[in-house]
Length: 291
Ligand code: GDP
Image (cartoon, rainbow, N blue to C red; front, side):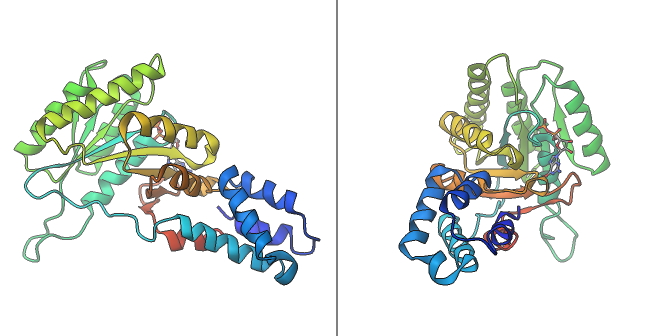
């Protein structure tokens, strides 16, 4: 995630080379559109010839800051009913890990009353009913961390499972219902149709549910993450991203590219395999980490 730092180092003692700069920005996954805009701004302001590479890096930071919202909206409970969060994404992006991380994050939220150590309650619905191993992983994890969980039979209908999970969440007065969905089907059309059905079914209980539809993308996959965001967004209307593996990526520009093209904000970031390697997205920290 340190592409600006490497930019400053690469070009420190070099003559101006716009092509190489352009290549570096694209390589950092900022995408062609943003890169072209940044290069044009830099050229118009004669940033490089007048003040050198450090000034170039400063302007790149400013341009990135202009694209990203200053604050990503927090996830707060819905008064009197469960807040439903649907997690979607292709297999391997870190969806199951991120579901567990988000559950723990929400569960560890603020203490709700001074007299009792009440905290938010979370119910997990393991609606990826085709991946037995993943469900077992989540079951073990949920047990260990005292998170309630609902699972179906292997191959059970995910929409029906989420429907039941919602009923259980109401009955148990749960604050957050997290639905982990399938990331793979025989065809992409099937997957999107299945996820749309899950969404519709949840909407039968509460027309505003799911309240959040979050796509999990892997920062190390660059342009693939952008195309996944396009597809899932057009089928499901996303409210945000969870961007994983920022620790393993020297880039991280995908956060900017997806916000710019699709106006989908990054809500959380994953920075490792441990449960604590997870935090709400913070623009200024993100930009500070680029240098
Ligand atoms: P799923 O198939 O999308 O459900 O993916 P998993 O949750 O099973 O994760 C796939 C792999 O990515 C596992 O080895 C995870 O430990 C790893 N992983 C998930 N999130 C992160 C992250 O933020 N950073 C790193 N380095 N690894 C991660």
